[in-house]
Amino acid sequence: MADILFVVTGSKVWTLNDGTEHPTGFWAEEAVVPYRAFTGAGHRVAVATPGGVVPVADRASLTDPELAEELAKIAEFRQPLVLAEVDPADYDVVFYPGGHGPMEDLAVDADSGRLLTRALASGRPLGVVCHGPAALLAARTEDGGSPFAGYRVTGFTNAEEVQAGLADRAPWLLQDRLVALGVDFEEGEPWAPHAVVDRNLVTGQNPASSALVAAGLLKLLAESAK
Image 1: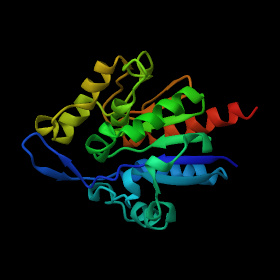
Image 2 (image 1 turned 180 degrees about the vertical axis):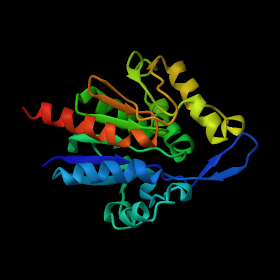
Image 3 (image 1 turned 90 degrees about the vertical axis):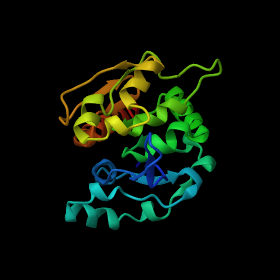
Image 4 (image 1 turned 120 degrees about the horizontal axis):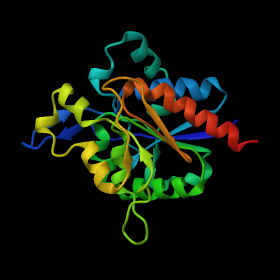
């Protein structure tokens, strides 16, 4: 049995370029589908957020009543750990779901950045999906660069942001910022499942990629146990 850490946005809003606060949070599918996969495989899950605030799911991600009901039954999301107090060495896997919330808080959260840097360097499986890769922007090496530079990565694309209707109001676009970090960004078809595995890092492009990311992390976990 492995211990898996979910690092989840604590933000309920995403501030757009006109100052408007767009209601958001984490995307339910990106949390529930991996949670189901990990616990179904017999593993334990803990949730951490900035400040230990109880995370809120984006209401737009709760249109499926069964998914919403399943999320409501997951106690770990109601009892999060304080991110700054979490040691990634205590966990076998670290996973970041998305939603627009990470664009607001995790993208600039130094505690999350340090955790990501340590998790990547540890060689243990690290997974990030959809807008979750915004958190990669806060990770820094000692020389000020990105530890993810040179890694093959995917995430929510510019095309998908345009089709979602928020690109023209976004203060920045995730794909652009990831490319500027020096990652090798791999773009799949909009909204289609697409995941990329590079060493111990597994990234997914969009909500539909959540199951692929979870499967990739479980495969890496199994290989590390051999």
